[in-house]
Length: 204
Ligand code: SF4
Image (cartoon, rainbow, N blue to C red):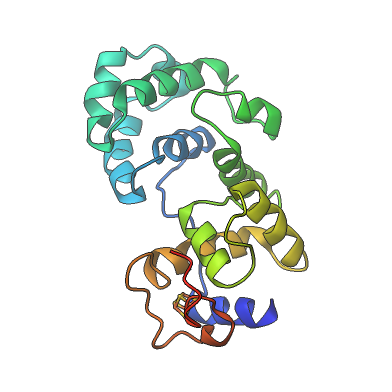
């Protein structure tokens, strides 16, 4: 673990969430919107959305057609627009530190709840997205057939002596910019010696 943490600290010394937000509920909504799309696209639409609807009160009274028009570029916009309004209605003015409540919101699963709890309340947890899953399996931190929940449990245990919120961001960014799904940058990677992919045990 130390070898991995040291390398991630060297490569990504200042990790942070790449979704833009200024308020706790904006992070929750932006993360919900990020399913099956990129943070870059989400940031494009939330810049417009959160400027026009700058409070939960305004969001809960929004017309769904208008939200659809704004978030159309990110896909699955009908469902996501309905989720935005429903989430605004269900929140009582703020995002609570309550996993069960968060996971009961439409479009919000364990991964989104983890992102919110970790970023807003510094709850030590790791949200396993596609990048974290791929990197974990390549680095032998999880098995090929592990579910995302199994990957999360293994990472939480293995990195229990480290800052999980920081490790989470570093794993996401390492997967997004270095250990990419296609053409990962293995040549200069200092984790080659522990990487399954590099040893030709193909994960994908
Ligand atoms: S050697 Fe390549 S596949 Fe393995 S962790 Fe490094 S970048 Fe990823």
